[in-house]
Structure formats: C-alpha cells, structure tokens
Image 1 (cartoon, rainbow, N blue to C red):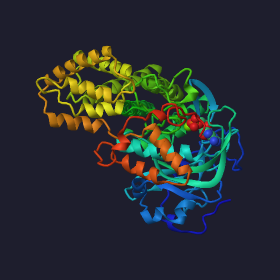
Image 2: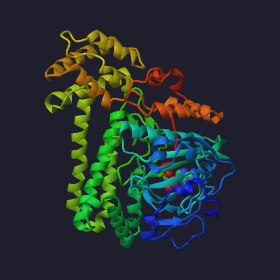
Image 3: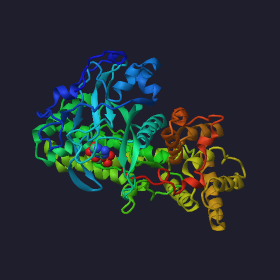
Image 4: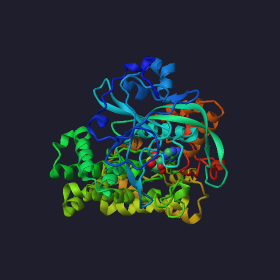
Length: 534
Ligand code: AMP
Ligand code: MG
C-alpha cells in the first residue's frame, strides 16, 4: 500500500476530490477484476514501479498546475507521476464506464489502466484532474495488464500537446515517465510478442467522464446512479446551465452536441484521425481523449484510417468522423433518455450537432481557402472539386493549404503555373496530364472566386495561416522520436514538443519538421499502420 509519507516537492499541490466525495463509490476496496454495480468509481492504488525515469514534461501544463521547472525535474515528481508515491491530498480511483466498441455494446469497460490521482485546485482557480495511464491493474482491467508501453505513451503525450496548441479541445499531458520495467506486447496481434519498455503518462483534464460513464448505468437500469452522475456533471462542469432538471438535461445534451461538433471540426481542419471513436472514448466535455492508434492525414484521403483493427470496415476513417460523432451522440441520447423521457426533444437537441458542424465547417473551409465567408452557391462545388483533385493527386493536405497562402489569386493572370508546380511538389504521385488540366481549371475558378471579394493579399495570407498549420505531428516524426527514445535519447521528443508549441508560426531552421512523408515511412509500422496494442 502506498502512503502519503515522505512529504516533498509535490505536496505543494492542493486537492479537492469532489468526484469521490459526492458520487457513489464501490464498497469493495480490494483490487481484483469484477463487475462493479451502483458505483461511479472504485478506489485503487497505482502499482509501484522499479526505477522511474522522466522522459519529458509539458512546461505549459506544469505552469497551470503551479509547478516550476525545478519541481518537474525533481526526484519527487518522477516518483509521484510513476505512481510510486501519493502526494498529500491524492485519493486514487478508477472510473466505471461501458461503451459501444466498433458499433457494438461491449458492457462494462472502465479505467482498466488509468488511475485518477485527484482533482488539483490550480493557482488560476480551476480544477484539473490528474490521471496516470499505465499505472497497473484496476478492477476494470479484465484480462489485460494495466500497463502501457513507451511508444504509445510518447504518442499520447506529444499528440495531446500538439492538439492543444493547434486549438483543438483535448485532454492534456503533464509527463511521460519510464517505469524501468518491461511489458509484453504483440504489436500486430500476429503471434510476435516482444518485450517493450513500460511507461506512464500523466494526463490532465477538468474531468475524464465519457459518454460510456452514463451508458453503463442505463444499460443496467440503474437510474439512481445515472441521475447522480448527470446532476454532478452539470453542477461541476456545466454550472452555467443552472440546477439539474428535465429542461436542464436537454440543454446540457445540446451543449454536449455543440462541443462535440466543434471538436470534430478541428479534427477535420487539421487532418487528424482519432482511430477509435468508441463511445467510451468520447469525452462529455467534447475533449479529444484516448490517443491510441490515431494518425494525421498525409496525402488527402477521406477513406484513410490509421487503425489496423479498423482496416476492414473503416468505420473510423477520416471522412466518417462527423457521422460517427453523431452516432455516438445518439447513444448518449439513449443513455440519458430516462432522465428526459421525451424522445422528440432529444431528437431535436441532436440537430444542434448537425447545425453546429455545418456552420463551423463552412466557416473553417472558407478560412482555409482564404475566403472571408462561405457562399454555398459557389463554394460547394469549388471545395468538392478541390477535394477530389487532392485525393486523386495524393497531395499532402497540410503542405497544400499552407502553401496555397503563398500564391496570389488576385494577380491579374493568377499564378496558374506556380499552382501546378506547388501541387506537384506536394503530391506523393506524379501529376498525370489529366490532373494537371483539372488543377489549372480549378485554380482559375478559385482565382475568380477570390477576386469576387474585395480581398487584401496580406489579410488573406494571415487568415489562412491562422487555420492551416505548418507543423503537425506527422506519423513518421512521432515514430522517429520513439525510435530514439527507445535507445535512451529523449532529444527528439523534446524538440518535437517544442516545434508543436507554435504550429502556425514559421520556425526558421526547423523546416525538416514540415516536409512530405519520406518514402521509407510509407509502409513502416508506426508510421502508416497502428494497432490498438499499446
Ligand atoms: P481503448 O481501446 O484503449 O480505449 O481501451 C478500451 C478498454 O480497454 C478500456 O476499458 C481500457 O481501460 C481497457 N484497456 C486497454 N488496454 C489495457 C491494458 N493494457 N490493461 C488494462 N486495460 C486496458
Ligand atoms: Mg479508451
């Protein structure tokens, strides 16, 4: 059993553990796998590890918590965020939730390898829950080991921070710590188990509640626990909606629809594919959560999924993410139906998702192209043609939009030749004559559409560069950082983290982080194919 003894640096954090205090917990406190009924959580201790070693930490998240660089480099930091010591006020627990996985109800899932340490009350007055991922078994681990490996921990750490700096709502990551122990993983479930270095990420968010936390109670007909969790969530995370009641539940659901739509618009804008949009991986706060086999579009392809487990049905492909988010919200609507008892009202509330998505996506698309507003009559076709062109030419989505800003569509003759050269330079396949003609035609339409607005070239460039990042966490870059870290060199993890802090800025000397995927990365595991094994 861990103790609060050996007080040290991290005891400066202040905790107020509302979730544990106000919601029903599991009466059983021994740590063995089981079905947990009538409880939102089970108290559980992290499993101490052999020799924790810091790989990286996020200075911004540390600052929000009130931790200095010295704090983060201390031995105590490493001990606490490896789960070897509880800081004063921490009260660790695992949450009970269920979920639909790949479209099918999977029953109880829960935090099988995540352990919440407590709710920190930060210097800015906000609350942030700290959560270890990979800190050992919990009652929800089923047959798995409760651990995480270094490669997936670095991927989660870097991508949470990258998503935040891109402007997408997300859980954050404070740290990655090596455990000094090995973990067995069969990365592609093909009978090749390997020993991999174990690691633990400390994630940070106002709350880690998922759609599945509500679903599990409705599935078990436990309406008392359902109501308690909904009321708690509204009071703590949506206080502006007022006291819980039938009308408030509806307004709350509308707000979840809105937040979820906004999150997916950000994903589509930057070319992020989550990879496992199961309902247990959907945050009630509309945060990107559970970075597993995610990926970033290189060549624009709406059918692409990074997740090998999803290769058959491609349920979680890039272009399907808005539909799946809606499907998941329908499952949440079903889960909270007993609180509302009005199917039509819930159906109506769901339209907030479609409306928000349509409005925000149109505005975002216009901004990506440097237009001041989206004109459906003209722009539906313009955008549709462009996306077909990018897909056919296998053009790198990030590089294309970023470099489109450098062309001047207001110039009298346009710069059609420059456009074709830009397309060619940023595509993964040679540009056939037919595509070249289509490209010329599209650019002509684009120039005349741009000229129909009284546009200022510099304002246009700025508008585009504010929504089209130069730097994203390219799949192969994450893999290079992992390869080096597995050899004991954490330099590239630190450098990537630093590059991704300013994704919209030019960063002279760092152009190598904004280049096309090299050929070697096309078929390499980790760069183009990922499994859920992590
Ligand atoms: P995911 O697909 O990563 O969202 O995980 C789905 C479920 O499996 C969640 O309940 C996780 O907590 C659980 N899980 C995934 N990996 C492990 C592991 N290594 N040990 C215990 N539980 C796990
Ligand atoms: Mg998950």
